[in-house]
Amino acid sequence: MSQVVAPTPIITQPKISINTTNDSESAVNGTAASHVTEFISFAIGEEQYGVDIMAVREIKGWSDITHLPKQPDYVRGVLNLRGAIVPIVDLRCRFGQGLTETTPLHIVIIVQIGDRQVGLIGDRVLDIVSVTPAQIQQVPRTSHAHSTSFLAGLVSNEDVMIALIDLPHLLADHVANEQKTVVLDA
Image (cartoon, rainbow, N blue to C red; front, side):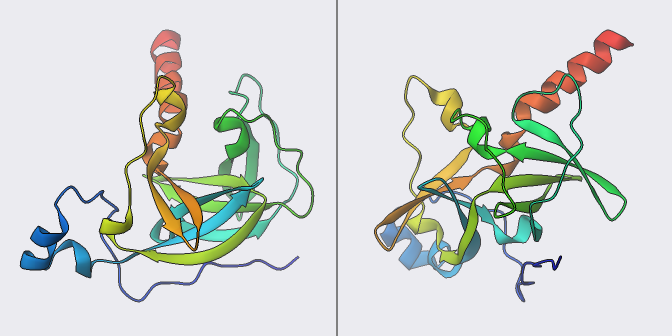
């Protein structure tokens, strides 16, 4: 089985932030318009998502995982990746769309979130998309804001909307519950 490794960018970019200045301010001080961030876009069903390419460590085909008891439904199990135990997150389930029926055609995007690696299940990788902060739109907040708290913004690319995943918030509930469990067990 061959592995697909994400390309290493030549220039490191700062963490994505949503541009809150107007275009005339950006043109005057030359800040936001000059920064380009690259995202790996991938599909989950008919929807497109993106993660910052700087967080991607590798992309691999689906392989068997070890299931762990008492985990949230979206944590499908763990994968031994060259000696490192990596939790595997089912994004379809995390976004409230049911469990992914994985097949050998699915992919796992290994990303770095803080000091830990996490695998994200996707249907297929689509492209590398370059985005300036001015192109990123805020996610509309609704009464179901919890379901959009994992999103950093939206980008329109070739008549398709790509939802950018906010990786630090993706596991926020899971990490908080782990910390509560540790406190209760102490």
